[in-house]
Amino acid sequence: MLEIDASGRLRHLIGLEHLPRERILALLDRADALRAASRDGTRPLDTLRGRTVVNLFFEPSTRTRTSFDLAAQRLGAHVVNFDIASSSTVKGESLLDTVHTLEAMRCDAFVVRHKESGTPEYIARHLRSNAAVLNAGDGNRAHPTQGLLDALTLRRHAGDPASLCVTICGDIRHSRVARSDVHAFAALGVREIRLCAPPELAPAPSEFPQCRLFDDFDAAIAGADVVVMLRLQKERMQAAAIPSEAEYFARYGLSAERLRRAQPQCVVMHPGPINRGVEIASDVADGERSLILEQVANGVFVRMAVLAELLGVDARSA
Ligand code: NCD
Image (tube, rainbow, N blue to C red; front, side, top):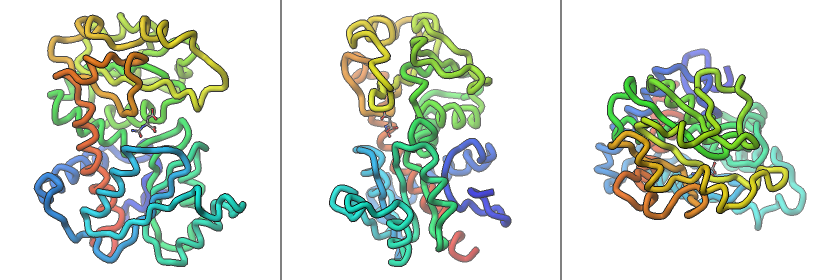
C-alpha cells in the first residue's frame, strides 16, 4: 500500500480511510505525548534535527501552514515555506519537476495543499527519493491532519466517544474536512455521526453509509453533544449554490438560540476560517462552549506526531 510499507511503517499521510483504527489512535496518543514532552510546545525537541520539511501550498492557508511550520520547527527540523507565487511554477514548471528539484536538494517531506483532489497521492507515486508526502488538504477529498486534530479535540473535551452524538453541518459536499472527520470520529468509536447540509450542498448518501443525513439543522442538532460547523466553500462551487448569506444563516447558521436544542454541555467546533454571521454567530464562536482555538492549539501537536512518525528516528532506522 502507498501509505504503509511492507514492514508496516507509515510512509505518507494521504487520507485516513486506509489507516487502521489503532494507527489513528496511536497518532493521537503520540500527539498527547509530544504535548507533554514539549511542555505544551514551549520546550524545543530535536527529534527531527537535520531533516528538512517543505510546505508546498498551492491554495491559501493560515492555520494549516503555520501549524505544520511550527510543528516541524518545534521538532528541530528545517522548514522551507515554498513560495508558489515567486517560484518557477509561474514560468510553467510542472508540479513533478518542482518536486524532483526539491528532492535533489535533499528535502525529506512535502506538505502539500492543492485544489485538485488526488495531488498528494500523485506526488507520492512519482517521488524519486525516500521523502514523505503529507496531505494538507486536496480539493474536496481529504484533510487528514484536520480529521486527527478534530478527533484529538473531541477526545480531550467531549467525554467518552462511545456515548457521543456529533453533528457536522454546512457545505458537506465540498468539504474535505467533513470527509476526514468522519473517518477520524469513526475510529474513535463515536456513537452517532450526523451530517447536515442544504439539499444543494448535500453529499451522495452512498459516500457516507455510516452517517445519518439531514437537511433540517434544527432536527440534526437536537440532542447533539458536539457540533462541527463548516464554511461555505464558494471557491469549490460551480455557481452560487445557495440563496443569500442571510437566508443561509437563518436555516443553517449556528446561533445561541439554535445551540439550545443540543445537549446542555454541547461543545462547538469549526476548522476555520470562520465566516461570522454566515455559518456561525459571533457570540457562539467566541462563547464558552467554543473549542475553535483549542482545535488550533491541538493541530500543532497532531502535526508534530505525524511528522515524527514519518521522519523520526524509528523511521530513519527502518
Ligand atoms: C479548511 C480547509 O482549508 O480545508 N481549513 C483548514 O484547513 N483549517 C476548511 C475551509 O477552508 O473551510
